[in-house]
Length: 187
Image (cartoon, rainbow, N blue to C red; front, side):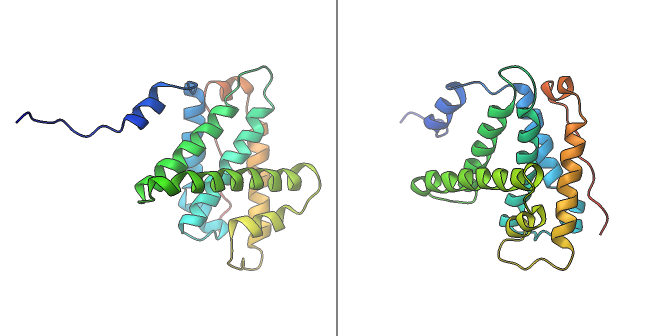
């Protein structure tokens, strides 16, 4: 009997080697956004619950704010689409690691992508068009939990601080995949 090698997920290999190539800068920017979202100080100072939903919301927030910034960079072919592609692929991977069945992953990822764009729009409304940023933060970052007094306003201030810090960073640095996020305000 011939010895068989390890099982290979041909679909994963096909996705890895086909389709548009994600620029290295987008990978670095995405990693930085996820790292900023995972900082315990951010979660603690904003009072975002340490749950799957809370973690999803913080990653979504940081990626959305970074996407807003890189979309303002001049010239075609910036890292914006790569950021979105990486976010979707990361959500897919995380769902599979948590044991979601293959048949349900696509639907769930589609809902997560829709949620991402909804949050992007809500935060943009608050930042650009005079919407209530604290209300958007309360609705998204805290989900079904009621934010403690002042938390939504503290989250709105953090969102504005991240937006300002990203706006101050040079396009060349961002194009090279270099970004820094501000620290969260102390509790």
